[in-house]
View 1 (cartoon, rainbow, N blue to C red):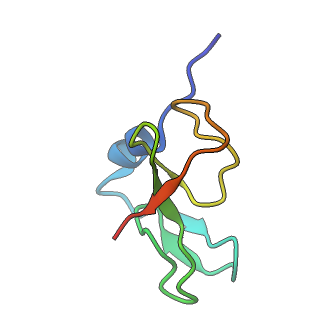
View 2 (view 1 turned 180 degrees about the vertical axis):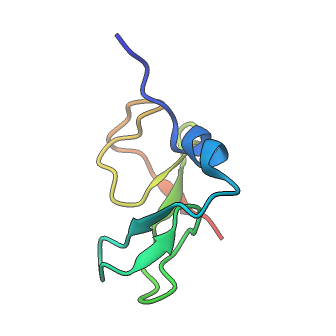
View 3 (view 1 turned 180 degrees about the horizontal axis):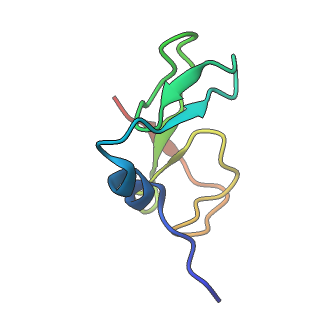
Length: 76
């Protein structure tokens, strides 16, 4: 089984670049490391309460601990 890279690891690899993603709420282009959309304010990144991994807010299950009923903390 191939391990799924953590979002934190991906963000670290992309730091210093102009990488952007599309906001799932308003489709605005936002920096990959932004925790919320600068256009509409939608929360983009949260922290898994179970393992502490930074994950996408719309994720159904944490890729690090594989919990689907994880609680999340907003990243400020």
